[in-house]
Amino acid sequence: MQIYLDNNATTMVDPQVFDEMEPFFVKIFGNPNSLHAFGTASHPALRQAMDKLYTGFNAGNEDDIVVTSCATESINWVIKGVYFDHILNKGKNRIITSSVEHPAVISSCRFLESLGVDVTYLPVNSEGVVEVESLRSAIDDKTALVSVMWANNETGMIFPVKELAQIAHEHGALFHTDGVQAVGKIAVDVRDADVDFMSFSAHKFHGPKGTGGLYIKKGCRVTSLLHGGEHMGGLRSGTLNVSGIVGMAKALELSQQYMDFEKSEVRRLRDKLEDALLKIPDVIVIGKKEHRVPNTILASIKGVEGEAMLWDLNKQGIAASTGSACASETLESNPVLEAIGANKELAHTAIRLSLSRFTSEQEVDFAIDVLSKAITRLRDISSSFSYAPSWHKSRL
Image 1: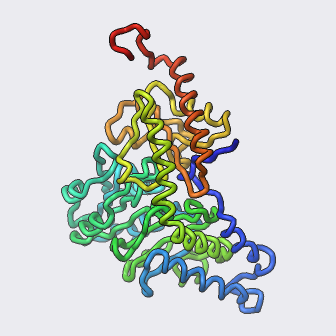
Image 2: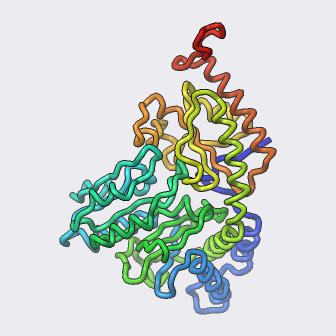
Image 3: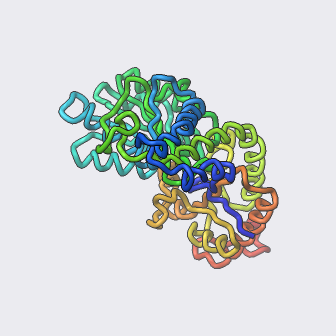
């Protein structure tokens, strides 16, 4: 049995999305900027796709949604664009973000620090969430941008973006949110949250890889990152990825249709898996269930190295992770566990399990059995975990 429990890293393309994309590889393949019939043939599908994106995020008619290659590009565009537009030779010199952002945000901020920008990394509470008062205490009128994620990629914890955006605006700062792990899992309404920018990526909600986007609120345009053409209203150069745009729009449309399923069935299966893990001694899960997106578990299993657990799971056909796929080759301790105050040893014991609407009950049952056996085996050979003898009064 092959079981995929790494849906926060990427998701399978929904077959309905694939069907929607297929004609634009071979049949309707023209460059949409060409004036001949081969080019204009894709225009109706592109208009329909963009309408779906605006509807899915409740964006206003005068807002911009710009299609990019991925959320990493979108994030780099916002952070570096704000530098050129509001910091370089301007009156502001500060960006505020959190200590648990995706590497795309952290690395972009580190780069700007090398150029002299003052970057503040907000701490998180015991659940790994930025508290509103933390931003209120840190922000000042020199702040150009606040960038805080909508939902964390490792814990699934949902952040108070609406309240954080309000504080940013009170001080004249722009607000960007990385919406990658929220879109498709919970309702995302950019007008209600009043964010200025939101980055997203299709492959996180059963769309194609290589396609993402950036929502830009009316009046918040930023200097372009890519130059070389007048595509996307002159905001982002590059030939339009027609199949990707169509696929992303269909994936977003489907995610709206399945939202109640996410809240009920995906959550039920996630909770079943989580409850089984928590019955095992010395296993903790980060964050309350009701404060997380419905599909995610970040567990710390005392005495079991995260990489060793992945090896055991992989041998049994189960895919999981120890955290962000964009940082998975570093083999460093989990940054979220470190941020909430876990020691280095505990931070190396993280395992992330993330479900999707394609995860079945049979797969969850099998995963519970494999995880239980793997924990027992790995603790038996662990140098940092041991139980007392069965006769010991501690009953450990």
